[in-house]
Length: 143
Image (tube, rainbow, N blue to C red; front, side, top):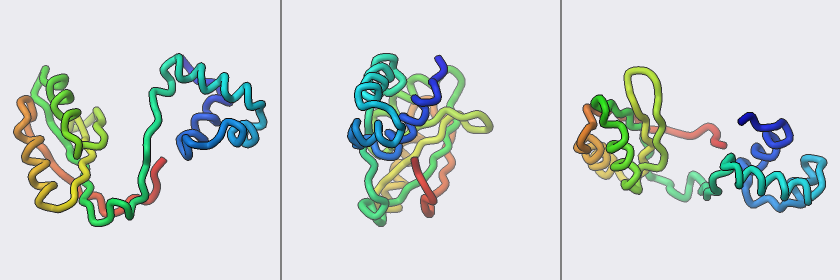
C-alpha cells in the first residue's frame, strides 16, 4: 500500500525524532494537531509504523566495536539462521541482501575480542556457511 506524501513527511519527522509532540509535528507540516494524531494512529493501525526505538549518541558506546558481518547461509536454512541471530543481543540489525551474501548483520560489542567471539558464534550457527566482517570506522549520518 503506497504511503501518501503528507504521511511520508510525517514519517520523516518521526524518524528524526519520534518524541516530537503532535503539536510540533502539526506546526512543521502545516496540519492540525487532530489530523496529525489521526494519521499517526492510522499508520500504526495499518502496520506502517511498527514501533519506536531509542538511538543513543555515538559517544555513549565510545570505544565499542561495530562491524558489518556478511553471512552466507546454506540453502533452505535462512529461517532458522534468522531466528538464531535474533536471539543475540549484540546483533543490532539484520538485513537480507542480494549479491554474494545472504544477510548482513550489524554487531556492536565492547572489544575486539568480543567481536571475534561474536563472529565465531555466528559462524557456529547451524546453517551458516561462512562469514566475513568489516569494522565500521565512523558513521557519517544515520536516520
